Each structure stands twice: as structure tokens, then as C-alpha cells.
Image 1 (cartoon, rainbow, N blue to C red):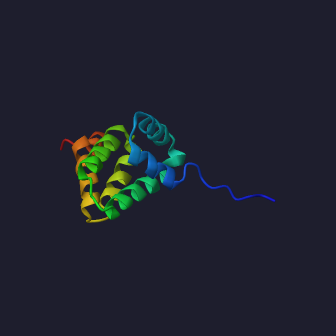
Image 2: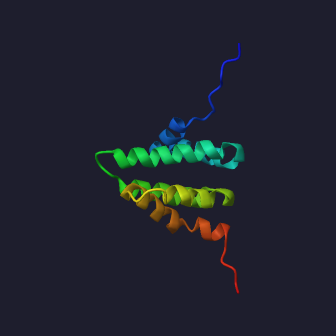
Image 3: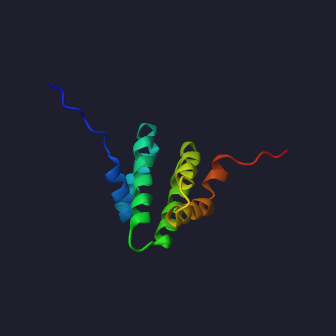
Length: 117
């Protein structure tokens, strides 16, 4: 009898950590970003967080922008392109606010600097 294990953390946990963004939540997310095995769970949770924000009665674009900027500043280079893919996956203002913060962080440019030709 082997019970099917659910991945830890699940996307709901990651989305809740993004919603809170306390120092403990940020530490948890930083730890998650350090482990390449957790990349999919991290990105699925991020997408769920932005999706939930897009369906909220009140769109807190400043919080989404700050989350994008924090994520871009703290994410390793291997995640930068995938973060931008998540941010560009919808034209909803919630995704645009996250993308604005992500661009403001300059993480993608640091990870992949322009070639001097």
C-alpha cells in the first residue's frame, strides 16, 4: 500500500507565501528558489498567486509590483526567463503589475547581459 505523495510545497502553499510576504514568507520563498528541484512548484504557486489576485474584487497592483520586484531581485539566473514567461502569460492588469516590478528589478538583464558587439 503506497500512498501517492503530493509534492511539497504545493502551489497553494507557495501562493499563500506570496500573499503574505512577511519576512518568514520571503525566507521560505528564497529557500525554495535555491533548490532547482522545486522550480516547477515555485512557478505554479506564483502563477496561482497572480491568478487569484486577478480575480480579487480589488486589484492591489502596488503589492503585485513589489512582489515582482522582490522576486526578480532574489531569483537565481536560471529562473529569470521562466519568471518573465509567467508575467507575460496574460494581459490582465495583475500580470502587468507583476511584470512591471519584475522589469524594474533588472534580474533578467543581470542574468543575461546584453552582448557588446
